[in-house]
Image 1 (cartoon, rainbow, N blue to C red):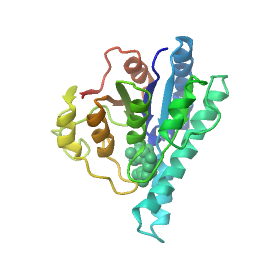
Image 2 (cartoon, rainbow, N blue to C red):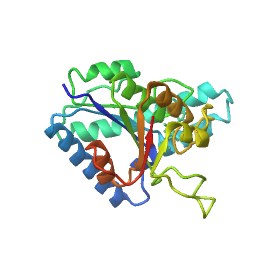
Image 3 (cartoon, rainbow, N blue to C red):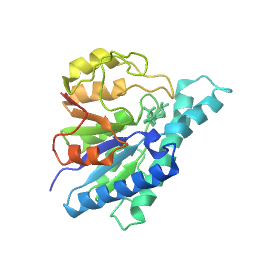
Image 4 (cartoon, helix red, strand yellow):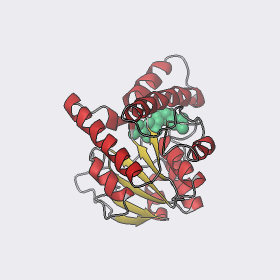
Length: 234
Ligand code: UTP
C-alpha cells in the first residue's frame, strides 16, 4: 500500500480577498483531490485557522491571557475551516473521512478506510504545521508539504526587509536557526511553526514550503516533481 501524503493548508488560503479567487482555488483543490484518488494515493489535509482563529483569539483576550485557553479558541477555528474543506471534497464524491479527527493517531488509522482525511488542530501549544508534521510521522511519510501564503523561507522577513533572500533548499538545522524551537504565542504566525520544525528534525521528515495560493505548486510537490518553493532536508 502506498503511504499517505500530508499537506498543511494555511487558513489564510481559504479566504482570499476576491471571492472569485476563492471559487477558483476550491475548484483546483477539488481537481487535486480527484488526481490523488485517481492515482490510488491517499492524502491527509491539515487546515489552519486563518482569520477566524485570529479574530476569536483577539475577542477571548478580553477575558483571559491563559495561552492554553486562547489556543483552544484557535483550535476551534481550525476545525471550522477543516469542515469547510471536508464538505467541499465530500460534495464531489471523494472518499473522505466523514468526521474530523481530533488527534493524529486516529487520523492515521482513518487511512485504512478513507483516501482523504481532513483535520484541523489537536492540542494547545503548537499550530497546524506541527499537526501536519505529526500526522506525517504517524503515517510513516518521509515528507510534509506546508502550503502557506509566502513563496519561500527567507533569511529575513520579506515584508519588512527589501534585501531578504529566498532559500530554494536548506537543512532543517538552518531552518531551526531562523525559526528557533520555542512555542509561538496564540494566534501568532511564523513561516513554519517552530514546534513543527522540532518534530520534523526529531523524526527526520523533510518539509516543502510553498505558496498554496497556487494549487499547481502543491500538486508538483506531492507528485515528487521540482516545485517553486523551499525544500528543507532533514
Ligand atoms: P493555525 O495553525 O491556523 O496557525 O492555528 P497559523 O500558523 O497562524 O496558520 P494560518 O494563519 O492559518 O496559516 C491558529 C491558532 O490555533 C491554535 C494556536 O493558537 C494557533 O496560533 N492551535 C492550532 C493550537 O493551539 N493547536 C493546534 O493544534 C492548532
